[in-house]
Image 1 (cartoon, helix red, strand yellow):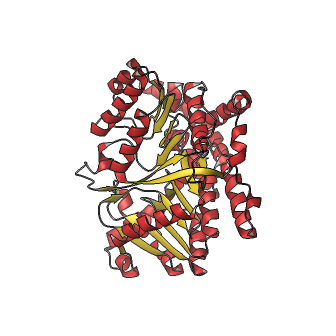
Image 2 (cartoon, one colour):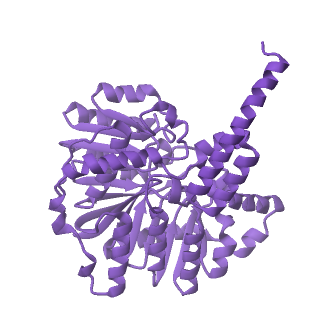
Length: 481
């Protein structure tokens, strides 16, 4: 038993150490935080209340993923030189192909953000909701000949999760190289028996979050939110759907589920494959042999993939959306389950509306999180005054992540319009510069808007004081949402 004297002595020794660590962490926050507001908040709390805030900062406060950055340095030095992507050259679409100066500038901006080229020779199929998405995904896996490379943020051990597991097992049993990557936070409920069955069949699995298990607890704030599948280097999938029964509307507590995924063929699949390969190299410490020979489609659609995350030199995800919004001349339509924009995106939307662009933001009235019940109202006064129209989807929970700009650009991927996707999550977005896909996305969103209610100013002002207080509290929590 420790005596009071012993406890006092320990406290006397530890207290200066805790305050020293708090001061050093505050310095780290000042030097490395992504925003001045975040640096100020962390520095003050770490210096004044280090015992409380030190563990929070080590888990939630870091804005860069140093371990991943180091892995990517090794990837670029050891792996990339051995990948021959010269066959991609005929399909690259340089900005010079565009006669209009504005369009050339836009294309070059997107290319530099993505570090991947726009390519021609693609086929892009819009997959609306779970039935269409899972049918196309399982069909591709069942047709795999060489490999299946797949990752999801959330995998559940339920009916659709079991169907996914069995599709991967069937592929492995016929000699296909199958690799599964999952996020340790999003898939924390996934039982070990689910993974054991995959491994027994020859499927290679890896958890994103670092091979050193003790480090994972300090990386809860960095999540791999990507949902990507690549089959034989020819067919790729990316979008909003994870692997669970709720994505088919089978969760009675959530109700109908509205989502969007994308199936791709052609050179753009290489962009998804590079992202997968980098994540696998970080998580599993190896680089698999993959096909880098493009399989062009006569559809000849133009697209690129932006894989963004906290290891990027720039905040590429947010900058992608800002660049797209600033390029708009006629319309910007956004569908997102979580609308928590930072200052750059908020300003871009306001300016677009002020210059006469039809700016619409579509969010769900029903949310899978109690906190996000208030999100649609948090930024509403600011954007509504500028002329932005806000709609609430009424027929269940809408989870799609879609952006439409004029008849020129359509973005479908995994990124929400929130701080987490802009700065903290690993995300993937397919950006198409294609009139056909834009028309299909416009038709899809018009259908969603017909099932939505437009918000007006009195919809907020008429709410109770506790509701409006909760809305303001949501604004304060924006940096961590």
